[in-house]
Image (cartoon, rainbow, N blue to C red; front, side, top):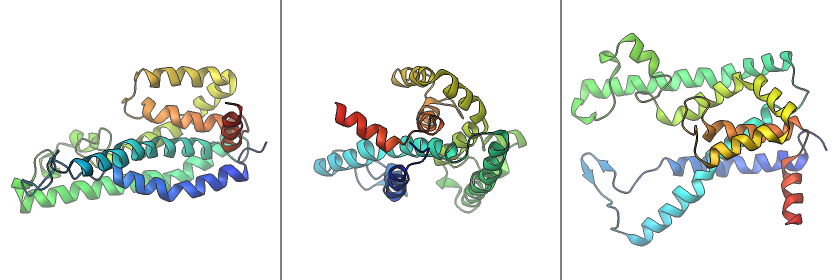
Length: 230
């Protein structure tokens, strides 16, 4: 079976847009969120809407980020055999596609917050503007994201895991399913879920996708075969 089968490739292509929509839904908060100090939609005010919003925004949309990590891991190791040269080439491409946008949008967001602080200081509740930050606080904003653009944690963790991909490759190659099973247990018991950069909410699904590519398996065929046998 080829590393990246046609079925797997077509499935990834078909999933991209729905997953993007799901991520937008996941970060769209309407209920109990103040706008200009006033809450327009309160929890329990529209029970049917609350139910629909919960199903789509929480239950369904929450699958988007794990699937994006799964796809990222699968694609990082797909194609030619993994080597030092391949690793360096992939990191070089991701420097432009991940690192530069990550720095740009975080900086742009903090500049925006600073502008708000200057013009309408009473609007800021949790964010600190750049004028009041020390150099350490400014640099740290790109890591813990409390003062940065929080949804970019996905990019942060993806960059870290990509850097650690040689170690992940060795573990998945040498241990087969054992290391992946260990990660799965940690994830199920919510151990290490939220560690910045390497949290299981990111690394487990990335490793799951990587496992298929490293062992030259098309995930669609494997899951389809497993589904038929159950």
